[in-house]
Image (cartoon, rainbow, N blue to C red; front, side, top):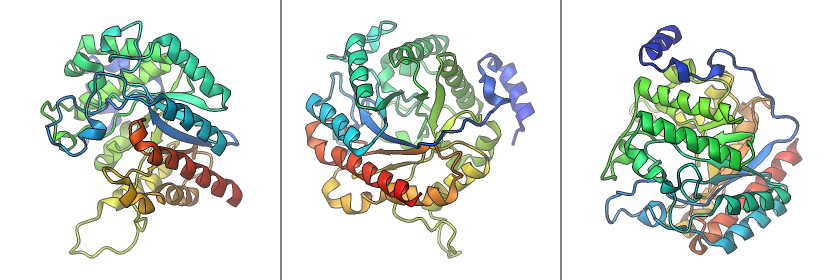
Length: 364
């Protein structure tokens, strides 16, 4: 395994040193202050998976690409009103290609909102006491929203487009406190149902991550990512991931006994890896926004009794295992598109977040 000095020398040889984040060697702890963040992910677009997902794949109804704005404005408005009622103070908005950006209008889907419309919506959200934060997922598994540029990964043209998009979106959100870059699930296994498969790994993955981090920092925001890279690459992650990057480990399951005795004949259950990541991120000094979901895939009604416990269990576990100064808050989502078909799980996700918030505040 390469150490940091060897890794940096390798980046220099690759011509990547110029895009390494300034904070790789200087990583001040940024305290969250007295109040925790209680955030909800809401989708303006669900165009995060492949346009070329194989026909008949059961989750196409939820994740398949659409070239038009897939949104119920009534549910969108109702959701934000409900968030305000429940005391939710942050909305992580999946932007994707649902905005006709001035810098790259060719990315936009049909019916995309104008930048003027987006600014008006963000102003309305802020007046409800909710802080809007952009989510643009640059993982190669979830970047079809970049259209043709998603097939130009790690090229000069690709970097130029990504830089333009990050800068403009940050400006539209008025230099948000955070900017979520996604970066989850970039593995061959996660793309096994795609007709077009491309992944980055090893130093190229890190080179591109550092590029995104620098662009976000230049735009005046703090980078935020999904932390699941650490599940399969813990040693590399803890050597190379800047402490300045806000981490969202995520786990939606019901088992939390990560340290219970394991039958030697039993394969090490994956849930132990997911849960233990919260503890290891804390031991290594990372700021965290743990993430849960009432995600019920194709049958929310059948699974909601179990999934409704995801957030409260996450809150209780992290309250016991993550230092308060590094526990920035909690994030919840249903992962459904904002359309009337999924009104119940989306509004449930908000209700469950409110209940978890009240529990947390009462215990303290």
